Length: 356
Figure 1 (cartoon, rainbow, N blue to C red):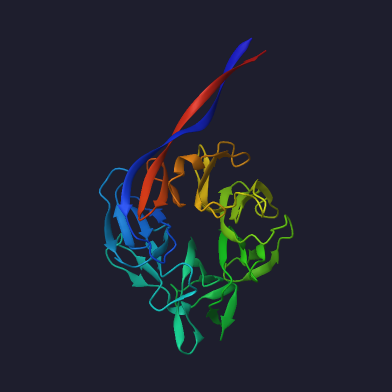
Figure 2: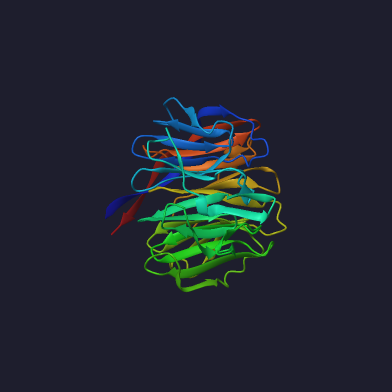
């Protein structure tokens, strides 16, 4: 008879690392995270921060002090892209999508084609909520649209959303996207109070559709707005929605609920933050019913979930989830007028099983 040790990853505690005093004002109290081969970056309601390691090294504002930075991304060449403007606005009067090729020292605008006018007297640039890349292509979820550019933002093709004179136009329906090869998943709430997920196939040049998009009919979305869509690889895709988390194992062709709270339940978390690591998957956001932070993790690739909300009971929101350059799982919460950045402390617990 042989004995095997089966190990499972568990979260043992939440260890505070640092605090950032900040009044979010009218901004949504969220942080954006990105890293390159040297620095980690935080987009905050009051500017862009940079550190060699957020967990242990000095952290300072390097650009856009006092402005809302709501999305960050680093492309394969190490260029940093940044979205400015209040996230809950479709338009912003100043440039919204900028790029730095020198790690945040200088920036250039890449949003010329995102300029739009609701009426002649109300003009601005569409505000991106998510930025992703393909070779020589930039994708953005901006102003309620999913758009792509092949000329550094001078012009944008609208893959989903609204147009005016062939250009992207601001709309009130939010939209978020995820590209998986030539497939593009996107979702949101349009018309308002009608949550949806849609899937289509892009042309080989990625600038338009070869098939679709088609809205998925199952499962019933129950008016749940989509907060994010994230590809986990090998056909696994997650979508966070109001009060629930969906999982697909066929590349987004179909989804099922792995977390689900009834519309009238005493808890109703908006799952807006998500990180996938080699050991665990972590989801977070805020519980709209209780107006407190929500945090949960899974050690089996998102099939079952353990609630950690008691660890963030003093916070109103989980504002960021990220894996840093050293493999730490970082959790940022918003408490009053400060962000608290902590590390999820993980352990592997083994149990012995006898086999013949």
